[in-house]
Image 1 (spheres, rainbow, N blue to C red):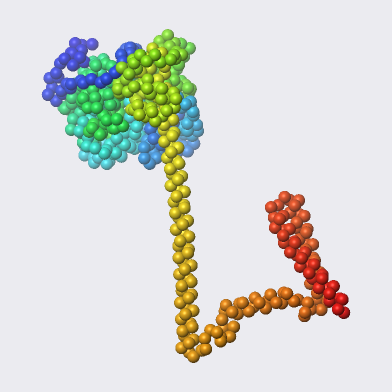
Image 2 (tube, rainbow, N blue to C red):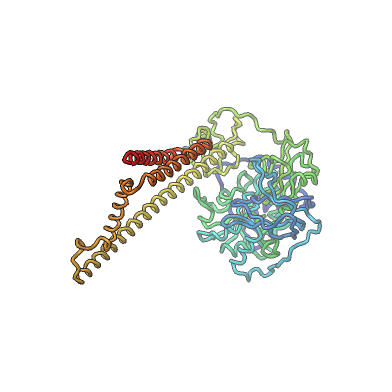
Length: 611
């Protein structure tokens, strides 16, 4: 390591090139200084991991809605071909990391704390590694911003620092003017060195990606925030900026975890504090990870979608610790086999670093777009979590918190599920860095409690939203029914008024024609009176049927009525055997038929007595 690089890293030398200035490093509250263990993996150049026998690509390896498959089992695909399309809103495309055929679309092991499987596309490589047709844009500066954004969206880019937020959304959803592009080169978490090595070997591509980002965002200046434990990367960035004749501000900050947090790095490099629940864009800053910027360059200029990434494999059980360019979808067990990892020595496989990473539940899970590190520590190197003890109110967690929160107060609220109280203590502002858990002498897993409380809060908010939506649907239905009833009543009134007007007009016409009026009009000319007369006649005929019928006719009527009654009894019996709901209705009808038959039987008897 040369002395000039040492001087640059400590911030004692101002770069001779006028285009490069050294920025002032501010301070942030809290933070910790764990052993970084970075020398395990940053001493070797980047190596390329071989193609595995199968590639499993989860459809939800980014923030937002999962992608929708557009291929079918058995279909041949080429390297870089779109195989799953992003949904509307926040989502990201997925591409084939190599050529081959689709061998399955099914649920597969997934690297997540839950241990649940997710839907994934499996590609069996044909070992040809044949690219689809590519359309490079060497003169990308001539392209309008809309086309550049579409290129980034089509390439399936997401933040490679670990969050996995779709990159194009950061540029297309700007709600404030961007003044500064901040390049996050801090990589503060222990063990992880993928960004460090990336800057050493691909500094020019990172800065070219920054130029594209600057054009898209409209930023006036570029600041690079990097920790002082990366002197080789600082030197490489300085040299690349000189070669590209780029104006940048290189701010070297003290090594302290979590200086690489987005809001923390903004405060360290600019002195500006992002407000609670706010975004960097609220203060005119756009923050991008170095890996994301390099991929922006590869996608825009060379038409290469996000199909591989640099991943650190490290830890005492890793076999050959280092940084590897790995195809997205490579099973973790395949990569660990290639590096000759000793899984018997490893206590567990951690995706990410020791502070914010999580234990992988199944080594068959694949490397994803957000997999920046696979850590294989031994039990001695990273002991299992100890049983927690009661809080002694020492206040160390408060001192270590980089967001100035009160972790012990949030702990009480989370333990007792007092979610409103936890929110009052700014629980949503917790970045889950783990600094509080690291310094806790009682070994309380504070971050786990905070994650639980956040999850419960999100669930309550979701339930409340669903309840509100249901209430609105019910109220809309009630209003619709009332509106329809009112419209129906108005139509009825309109018809009644029209009928009354028509009748009045007819009467007036009759009077003008010399007719005597409605009181002297024959019943047949009045449809209402005619209908009433017909009903009265029918009723009278039903009341006195025997007056005009002979004994034989009455006997025939009785026989018919009795037959219908017997038929009704048969239907009742059948319905009772079937357990039908119609039994009661059939019994009521049979009773009426029986009464009619009895009445006719009496009339027959009376007629016979008169003979």
